[in-house]
Amino acid sequence: MLFRSKKQNGLFTIFSQDDLVFELPKKNPVRKNLYKDIRKRMRTSLAQCDRLIVTTQPLAEAYGDMVDDIQVVPNYLERSRWGSLHSSRRQGDKPRVGWAGAMQHQGDLELLIDVVRATASEAEWVFFGMCPDEIRHYISEFHEPVPFEQYPEKIASLNLDLAVAPLEHNRFNESKSNLRLLEYGAQGWPVVCTDIYPYRNAPVKRVPNNSRAWIAAIRERINDLDAAAAEGDRLREWVPARWTPEEHLDKW
Image 1 (tube, rainbow, N blue to C red):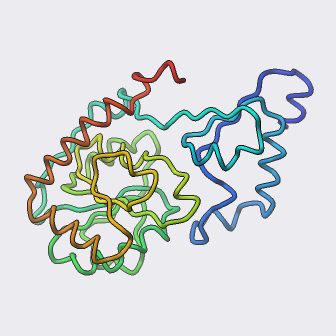
Image 2: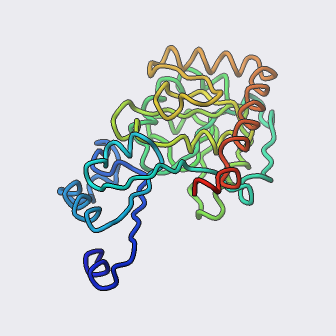
Image 3: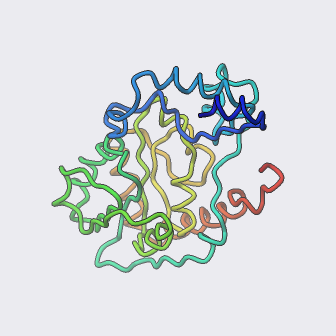
C-alpha cells in the first residue's frame, strides 16, 4: 500500500513508530501474532517513506539504517485530557499501592510477585489492566481495561498513595518512553520504578530489579505517607512543566 501510494501521488510520506517491534519480549502476547519477518517488513515499508517519527533516541538508533530522515518527538500528555483530573490520597484502610497498564506486561509484572506477597498485609494492592494469576488472591482490587477515552479518568479513580512501574531489562523496554511516569505523575502519585533508561530523567525512586530493593523502597513510602505525598507533588509539578504538547508545539 505504501509503495502504491508513493508511486501514484508522490506525496511526502511520514511513518510514526512508538515501539521496537522486532524486539518484543518473549512473554509479550502480541509476539505470537507478529510476522516472523517483521524486521524485513519494517525496512521495506520505511524505504517508501521520507521521514520516520519516533518517541525516543534508542528507537531512532534502532531504526537508523532503515530511513534517512528520523525525528525524535517524545510522548506528551494533553492538558485537556490530563490536566483537570483529581485523585485522592489515603482512601484505604491501608496505603493503596498499585499499577496501571495494558495487557502486554506479563514479564514486567512477574518482577512484583514476591514483592506483593511480602507486602500484602501492609498495603492494599490495586491492579488496573492486568494482574499475574500468581498474586490475584493477594491483591485488594483488580480493575478491567476500559476504552481509551475513559482511561485518564479511570486511572485517577484508583486513588493510590504509591504507584509502581516495573520493567524487565531488555532492548524493547530500554527503547520505551516515560509515558507511564507521566500518567502517574499527573495524579500526584509518588513512584517506585525499575532503574532503566526511560525512567532516569524523572523525580522518582529507581531501584534494581530484585525483590529486596523493591520491598524496601515500598515500605519506606507506605510507612511515611507525608514524605511520599511530597514526592508525588514534585512529580506532578514536573509533568506539566516538561511533558505537555502545549509547551512543545515548535517541536511538533
